[in-house]
Every structure is written in structure tokens, then in C-alpha cells.
Amino acid sequence: MDRKYVIESKRYVDDDGNRTHDLWVSFVEDIKIEDGFFKFTPIDGKHAGLKHYITFSNIQIVRECPE
Image (cartoon, rainbow, N blue to C red; front, top):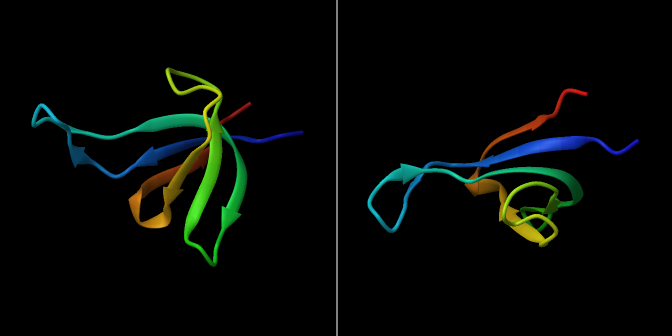
């Protein structure tokens, strides 16, 4: 059984000057400890189905979704 995770980026200032963050619901495909990043494909939202890479330093929260 695959586990779903919520991955949330650190807060940043967007193009309009607002403080925001990115949030994805995803299955984590790969964790490259030596390279310092997560590889995942969101299953929800406007980026669903597109591969993403996020460095550990840009991650605020990773938590498992409750069933």
C-alpha cells in the first residue's frame, strides 16, 4: 500500500509581494539523501502528474496523510 504525504515548502514572498508557501499531496517516489532532495509527483491540484524535485532546505513540513 502506497502512503500519501503532504509536502509543504517554506514560506516565501511571491511575485505580488505576498508571503505564501507551496503545498502538495503526493506519493514520495524517491529521497536522495546524498543529493539533498525529494522527488515526488503530486496527485492533487494544478501540478498533478508532473514530477517535482524539492531540496531539503526548502521543505517546511512532510507528514503522512491520514487514511
